[in-house]
Image (cartoon, rainbow, N blue to C red; front, side, top):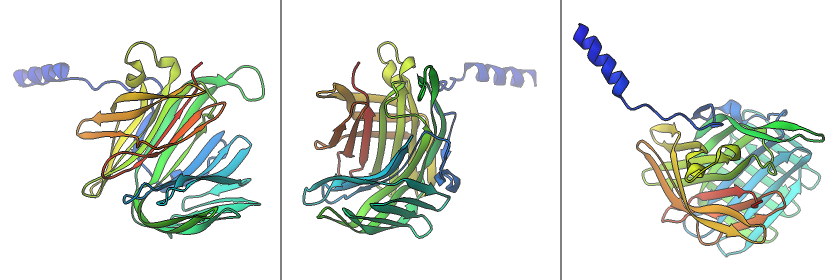
Length: 332
């Protein structure tokens, strides 16, 4: 008995220990729940995004309802099969969501999402159409990023910068329907769709974070990979720290459910945008245990540069293209 106890103790001591999560990483990762879809009115920033990719052409689409402080609206960005690029939107003073629906309504248009009926409707002077989703699989979720401090709003001092939650009610689905965006038709048949919701006291102009990556990539046998995370800048010091201190998750969504982990990240081929001198990685590799994702951006991406930050959206490379988005700040 003594020998058995001693051997067990030595094995526990000598076994490799799991690496601690980097400072500021989400305190909990897991699977999305219906409650995650509801509005969080106390959050400074909140958004819901539908992403669609056509596997047979270069077409893709991003529809996002966003509220940041007093600015609220819906934005529609993408390119159709005829290579017609679109970037449009409308203001929506009223944005409300519960467990099963989202309504973003303004004088110039509305976006409605109904999870029970798996329907998405857009209506404005520039954007019209409806989509239906089928074969839906829910995805991962995470809570509790702590990203340091940012300037206080409307006064002196500082405030905590937090990404309180991020959830994917839909990690993978089949979409069908049609949209017309300022005369550009989108025939959505057999497209792949995903849907996510994020909220927190993190603003696009906060310099507490950088190198924000979001990827949804399909794979064989009904599997979809999801990667989501960013860097807390006050912890990024020294060679290799940018990747070692990436705060996020990697998930494998498939017929057997959702598996979520905290991955090791390697990012390469950093692009430099002019004139704001903003960097983002065009090749990314994520790995934790048996879950692995390696992907890169397509050659043509939608790039928008603002005073506060840059946004890069588009397709991933490969025979089964997915959706990629990168957010970053100008070099200072």
